[in-house]
Image 1 (cartoon, one colour):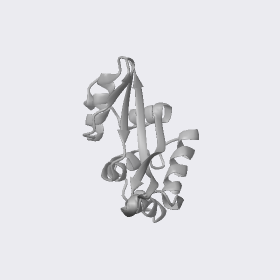
Image 2 (cartoon, one colour):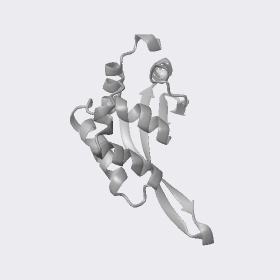
Image 3 (cartoon, helix red, strand yellow):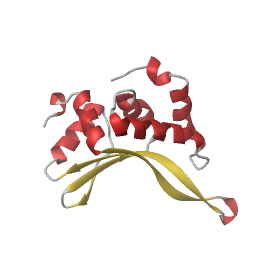
Image 4 (cartoon, one colour):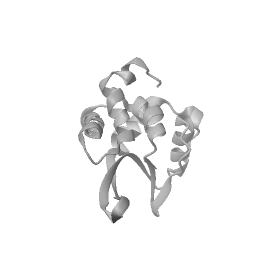
Length: 141
């Protein structure tokens, strides 16, 4: 599959079926050796055997530099935690364009970014933009 053959609707369909909006919890050592957990917002897209070309086409279509990795013989995962990529690509592609459970998961994820004290302050920007209507006013996809 070539990236020029893909549409954003096709990619949203894959996200609806095989995407996940979640948080990656990591320990963060503060001064004095205190460990505090930090929850980084993450988007994950999983494809199965024979779909490496699809993942490459999706990355090219969305202009994502992050490489997917193989989790087993038959599974490829693309994990996005980068603030800029979430703000400029992932959220605009999905905002007000998902259906059913995935739409609910996406909105819960955005809201949790603003309310979870373990989410780093720089990621709370995504929540503030969402609440202030930034993604409504600046549709990209």
